[in-house]
Length: 255
Length: 255
Image (cartoon, rainbow over all chains, first blue to last red; front, side, top):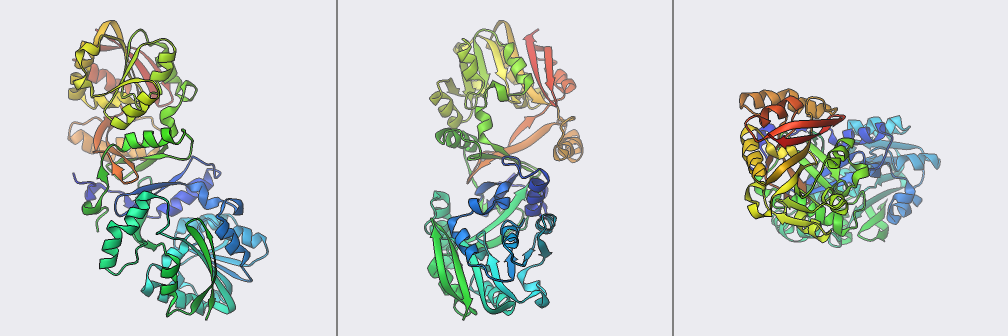
């Protein structure tokens, strides 16, 4: 048997949604439901699912700063269980959350969020316009690379009202404190990423929960310079930025 | 890419020992270090590493009952970080722990346990004789099947003094509450186990931590009847048994 036997592997499905549903149904108790994030070099990272339900006090200071910049009608991209959407709705904003995970959408709805199961590209135009578009929880990662960023950010611009803001967060892969991540982003993987024209922080991973696994997906952690670079040729420009360790939040505006 | 790319997998090593070392070095704080146990059908189970440091109050009632039956000099097989060895030593027993994991042995020693890195089969005969031999923490599982049980139990009998006891625990795979485990043990896998003459509770798994993974190993969960069956033809006989849900502890004596 190799390092895994392809014949008897896990079942592809909504592992992320199952994590959120199990945690929610169990009363969001720490230490009960864990998400396994598996990187394509075999690195596994375990997260307590309660992080998907954390309130503003537990967010990074950078994300709290980002949410202070939210104005008007909000589109929360990759809303998960609604950890950002719920406090923003409580603060008086009209919020629509979107997520590709059916399980996440179900949990968010159960928690009172107006959530739609859709990718950015398939979001119906009549849901807009939005004054604030959120890519929090490192969801700038879904921009992946120059090509994907151009597609997604053009699409999001078409849903944006006059004076709209895009507020997103990421983690600078060059200043992360974890040696395994530095090695992945800065050495072995970076060489391979450079060879193939990928960004150093481009990461291939999947979520595992019990016997379910998501498809492999690409997700990129950007440095400030890399983010500036992928914004070129998109309708958005960087207006403000706040760091909290390697994590940061940006406010983008339409050019 | 298949369900895992064999070319870029994790590195084979002492993942279990790394889990114990990281938890110990971090002050044994819950929610900080997690072990991922991966079964060969792709099921992943996450355990907080603090369980390996749990005191008697946190053990199953069956294991507390088992430890009350400990007499004299003790051999703790698969001692891990010493969770059983330490309280037994404090109670006045001379305890030798053995473990195949170098990291586990290092942590156990650091905690004051006389621990040796060795498998049962390679344990030097002059370490004996022992009055109590422990296979706690479900470590009856290392007996695997009739053949392995005969080898290991004969070897352990040769290290046992007159009137010695073997105290071990397991989990009845037919009465576990987890549907995924029932399915693995009682349906798909059982059919395949039966075809190959394996016991229904025979489980192929490995430990993962960050980028490290152990080799796949077999570990069996026995029902009472299955345990009785593998004891036939060995020097040991079942004398007493205590259940706590699906978990149980047995006291074996030499025939």
